[in-house]
Image 1: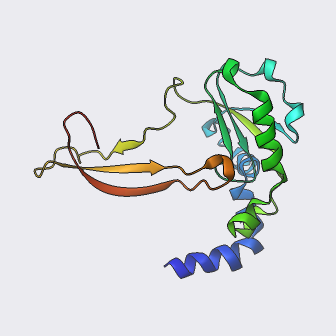
Image 2: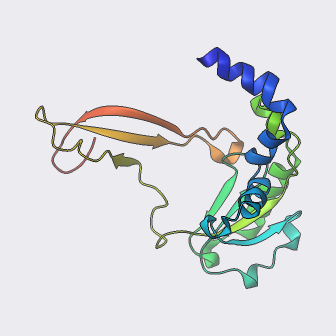
Length: 178
């Protein structure tokens, strides 16, 4: 199974324009819109080629800034007043110069035009996702264990973002999950 995925990633996807389009945030938005499902997309506040083009005064209180050509190169802005614009500019300037496809050996990312996409933040501004999300029906096990899906993110500011979803049995501690 793993060998087949590696073969697709290295030999097939780079030759398929649709794979690059689907991997890029801007390209997939255009495709979903062309299929008539624009209402299903997170509202986009702007797409920019350079950080300097962003008018922060026109942005709402909360939003998410993402690179269009990579996974995990994001800045979540819960309060616009707390955003360090100079630090954000450094990150995006660095990210926009990198070829994510070469870094991750995923060549279908290489043709994607590096851009900054800004989207509305979903939710109430609290945690974007919880560290451990329960699986329905798994809380009432007779042996006192809980099955949880745990999401881990590693150094997203350095391009090493790999969210890992894995099942894990944990003892119920009464006041939470250890």
